[in-house]
Length: 527
Image 1 (tube, rainbow, N blue to C red):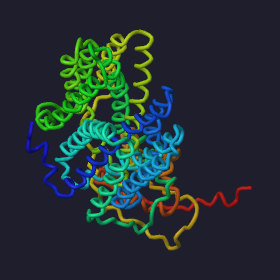
Image 2: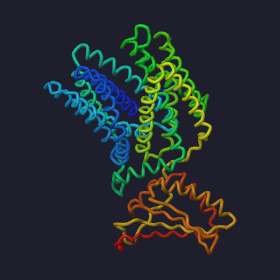
Image 3: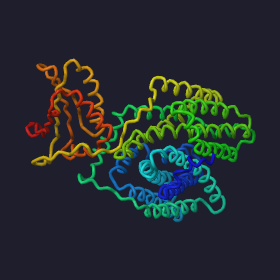
Image 4: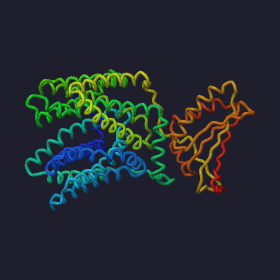
């Protein structure tokens, strides 16, 4: 299990430093959740208020996931990552002050938990975008596995540390430690000597950056498939964690200790899975890993549901954690490889929203099913449905493992205008003269061109065909502004260059296709 390949990313000093920071940050997250939930039980006996602590912690991921991803792509990632830690520390200090002054109430605790969740929502996309900068591409799956270790180790360490502190000196000291660790993490990030490349075109506007990020995902078939798979997988896999308290309580002598033991077993299994991934990847393809992982998670659901005691439940949870980590890591790695660096944080924030959305839906769904039937039946239905749905997705949406070359390219040179437009949309017309007998083949290729242009940020795209000349086609692209038109040249990849060469192979003239750029002025005459 201590495979050098699995631990290879830790040989890179910067990755090692930021990975340890990530461990500390996630440990703080779990400590904060445990302390907040426990404190709420002392403020009110209402079950709904206690449950809302978890909602207040995760809701910012849905509300701010995409804006935070856009900001992580626009701003200096080092400073942005550091500011998220300072935000968490400031909220922890505010919480300590409120507790010290005796002002805490249940609604105020929910508000402060929500503010802390904002820091968590802002932090995840930027760290996901940073990782590919720190390790060579072949080591990216191992780096994702180490991130899984960080998440699962902190899931074990955080609650244990928080529980010990609460029992010995009180909840307030959990938040003090949270603030200290967060400030320390910010100083560690400050040591990172990353050079932020400032675009000569200036920063993207937030609204435009969000539009381009969502548009990229819509126009990437492989990314859409990954999002659907991760949502469907976690709709089912979350039943293992969401119903775990009921599983623990149903066991002989089931209490909080039983729940903690089962949770720790799941985390330990996930850590073993992360260390075993390089060996599994050499044996199996991504499709095989996902198929086998889904089946094993289903078996773990059934094993946990019908476990007669904690001694049977522990290996079931460990196996489930192992398979869940392997499947989630495979999906995360595929998502990372689908994204160029300029849109990585936005893409990964949408990925995280799909994961969290699937988890939230699954927890509610299987909780309701179990309430209407029984715990055993509910988890059994989740297990069977998980296998059927994941196999169906693999059959109807197979991952052909065809990766586009997203290496940045400077082959396309940005145009220079005699008078730089300061307003209005830009319309680009590219005229192709082709053999009419190859028109159907050309139209098919131009659909790839459409996806490419829209992923780069174009507002719209269409293909025009001359009714009097069957061999004349005009590709028409509309950009939001002249600046956004120039940004598309900074987003060109090796795949786009290959696509351009394919289109040129249809052009029958010796001269290249004629390109015209027009400023749309119709809005001047409206009204």
